[in-house]
Amino acid sequence: MKKYFSLFFLLATLSLGKSNSLPLEKLLDKNGIFYVKESKSPFTGMGIDNKNREFFKNGVPNGKWLSFYPNGNIKSIENWKNGILNGKYILYNKNGYPISKTSFLNGKDNGTFQLYHSNGQLQILGFFHEGTPRGVWKYYDKNGKLTGTVDYTKSKVYFDQKN
Image 1 (cartoon, rainbow, N blue to C red):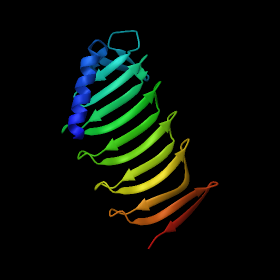
Image 2 (cartoon, helix red, strand yellow):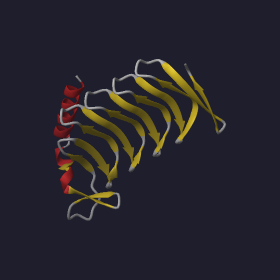
Image 3 (cartoon, rainbow, N blue to C red):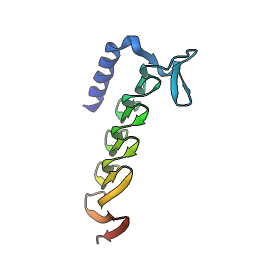
Image 4 (tube, helix red, strand yellow):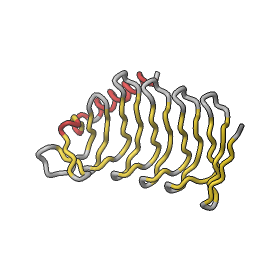
């Protein structure tokens, strides 16, 4: 299902924005600013290839970026604002299971963080505030059993391993 949604979304986006879409191979990265090769103006539009769909505004990443595996499954969903990660960031394995889910605010982890085992079971559940771990982080085994916690309170770390 995810594969078909991805393909539909990619095709719909391509058909709506043909005039501002270019193959990524035609873009050149000059110190973090993207230009159309042999152009002096920063690129605004969508860069595409068979594995990626990336949006730029004034030469920097801006908007939702999608990457795909060769099998068509989504590899990553990234959100950018003015060249800085900002918003949800999700990585998937080639079988469509999430690897990690987090959010960014001004380029720093901010909000709920989830890391998954290869079977799709939650491995770590925690929270970031402006790039710093906060609160109680929970650790799980591949069967979903809680194996330990780490409490990030007032710059002190407390570890509790479950038996």
